[in-house]
Length: 102
Image 1 (cartoon, helix red, strand yellow):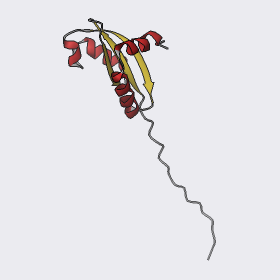
Image 2 (cartoon, one colour):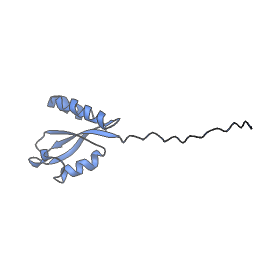
Image 3 (tube, one colour):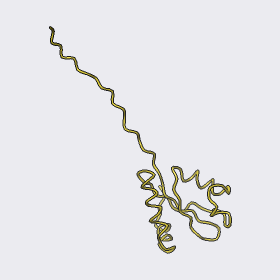
Image 4 (cartoon, one colour):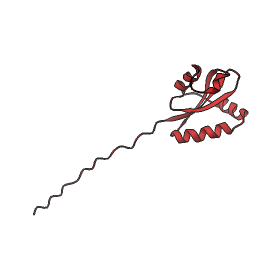
């Protein structure tokens, strides 16, 4: 009986890299702010401008993407979106005023 010390090699799957999500604010033509989430806020803003994406913009077109905030994952973005939607408009305007794009 031979005693060989073979080591078992176990293939380990890499952990899936979670996609980065963002919460964003878009200014409508009437001055109101729309809050949403996306994994690509620039592409999503283009959808809003084209009239697709949210009924919010049927009455007043999307004019500018004025705020984006990176989040760890989709659930984090949803949590942040809920928090921002609860803010008064003046607090949302402070977010926009303090925003410094990369």
